[in-house]
Each structure stands twice: as structure tokens, then as C-alpha cells.
Image 1 (cartoon, rainbow, N blue to C red):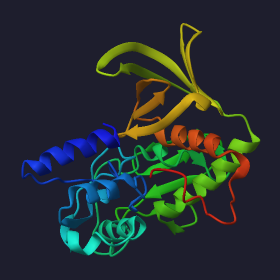
Image 2: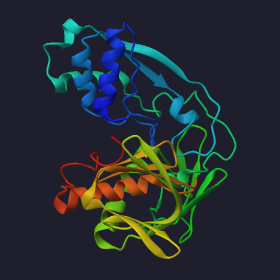
Image 3: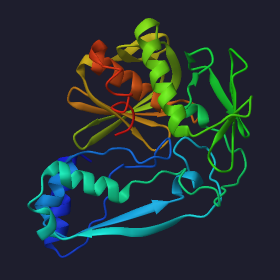
Image 4: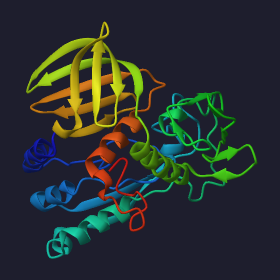
Length: 304
């Protein structure tokens, strides 16, 4: 649902005396750190003129990371961090209100994790959705996971996923997925601007036009530097030229939404495919080479 549609629905519910719960991130994070979210949330708060209750969850990421194929068992909790009355926020700027909300719900899965272990089977399976690059060779689309480990097809790059959410390399060094994600974005950014992008997988595709949904079928889906190509029987069916794509979003763990011209497309992939690689490729295309690496350490890329 669009931001505008969600706001209209929230206003209608508020007028009926109902309460509105909003999860600004839209889903679990890939890394365990709260992402920045749409500024339209501030507009909705101002339109509703209701008290805002900020509620923080902890432990949910480590029990079910967005990249993971399997759930983990561990301790999770939630609690109220702040209540903001209308009289308190009506005079402050949008930026101030946004920062208050963000700080009130911000969570880092690696804070106070020493006493919280999350156990399960096949702990690392699905990790290639996030770590889609071999960070030793700086080559994308060559990693795969099995049991509690991530491997590379082109080198001895290897990570072991721990029950506390850290990953350990072959030398015993521990790293958070938050920091690994920063390395991935930087390495893939350089690869994007210096090498050929070709990432081919199979997907089921649905086309939505307003209220009409149409199943298009199964396609070979090829990610390129400037487009996503759908092919069937070796023939090109459709090319999503990034120049004409309004937005790309990730839904759940294995679905990609493409807003293309006046239509919306839903691509459903196998569980081994990285939606994150598709999103970053699109974002790098939109940013072009005007991006200032020294000023901003890739925080504008990824889920937000």
C-alpha cells in the first residue's frame, strides 16, 4: 500500500476512535540495526494529532533475521520508551520529530547480547541474501550457506554464524553483521562501477495494474547494471530499465517489488537468491558516480 493510502486509512480509523500501530521499517532488518524509514510517518503523526507511544522491541532480529531460512530460539522483549503528546510535538520541526521517533524505537541487536543466545538448526542458512559478496576476492553472487557457515565458490572465504549473532572468520575474528554490511556496500559499489553485472535466477512474476492482478509465469530473471531482464524460452519478455523504474522494494525474504511506469510487478525468487543485491544495484544506478564516499560511509544505501 502507498504512503498516501496508508495515511488515509489511518485518518479514517482515528476518526472512528481506533488506535493505529505502525512498524516504520516495514519488516525485519538484514543487519540487526534499525533502519531509517520514510519521512511520511511524520506527516501522518501531524495529521492525526494523537499521542504517540514509542515501543521498542529487542531480541526479535536474532530470533528471525530477515536473511535467515530458519528461526532461532532465544529471549525477546518489548517495552515503551516514550509517550509524546500532541502539545509537545506540534511546535517542533519535522526533523526534530523524526529524530525523536527514530531514537525511541532504535534498536541494535548487538547491544547487551552477552546473556542472550539464539540457538537453532542451520543457523547460517540464507546468509548469502545479505552477504552476497566474497569479501576476500570482492566478487559478488558467489557465496552460499550450509548449516552454520557461509562459503564462497571462488576462494576459501568462510564465516561461521554464532548463537549471539556475530560471525567469525577463519582466523577467529568476530564481526557484527552491521559492520559486514558496510563492507559489502563499499565493495559492491566499487565492483558496480568497474565490472560487468550479471546475476541470473528464476522467478515467478505477477503484474498489478491498479486493482487487477495478473500472473505472468516463470522467467529467467537477469540483473544487469542498468536493468532487470525477464526471459522465457531464451527470448526477452520484458526489460525493467532502471531509468523508468520509480522504485524497487523488498517484501519479506524472497520477494522483489518493481514499480515500473504505471504498473507494479512482484517477483518471487527461490530462498537462496539475494533481494538485497537487486536493491543495491538499483540504488547505485540512481546515485550514479556523484556519490561522495569520503563524506558519507554508504549510509544512504540499503533498506530505508
